[in-house]
Image 1 (cartoon, rainbow over the protein chains, first blue to last red):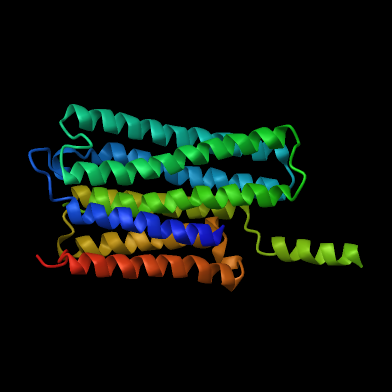
Image 2 (image 1 turned 30 degrees about the horizontal axis):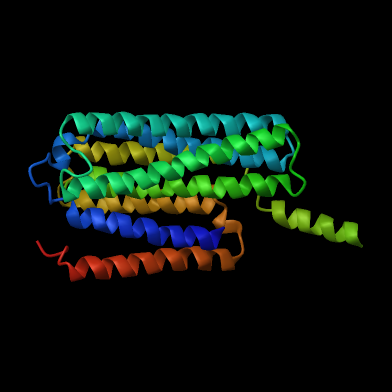
Length: 175
Length: 105
């Protein structure tokens, strides 16, 4: 898992660097500072950050062999993740309405590809969380249950740390 | 013998356990740092703006990796794998950005 996460750093590093390089290439489209809604994205970031807390509480409950609480925290984490993705979809629709589409400019392409890849990772994480909660409920894990939850947790925390970097470099630092 | 070994492994795995309250405290610190980050959008930090933002980003990153992902308590081999990937990514992409004259105003 750690090797996989190390390789994911390379993937997101490439996408972030590409965005940094092209964020000023807006062509006739809107400029990043004109369309970013920092208060809204700050709330989304906070939601994702808190989902890391609920995830670690799920891992902690799994280690105490408390299946009910493990499932509860896994589902809360999935809800927070889905809320984040919902926020991202809302942000995209707003941006498209304001004239920023995937093919509007290099800035638009690199922004949608970077945040889209991250959103895809979060969506996969939500599916993994719900699937894990389902198999725990049905008692279908034959191996080390806490380890299974911890592996899902590692993936989930990774999408959170990627967002920590994206939020600062893409949203808070002006182009 | 087998049971003794299992017990030993169990103790080893859970020896670094943090309490739920400790996790909540770390989450509160992370939330406070995020609030500080967002404040840079509204308050003029002058020359400190960029270094402060980058420092807060690194602190949050390291805290999540160390405590929530438990890397601080895992084998150093895992840290090597993860930080090697991260370091390689940083190196490769800083070189790429330099090649494209990103750091030249």
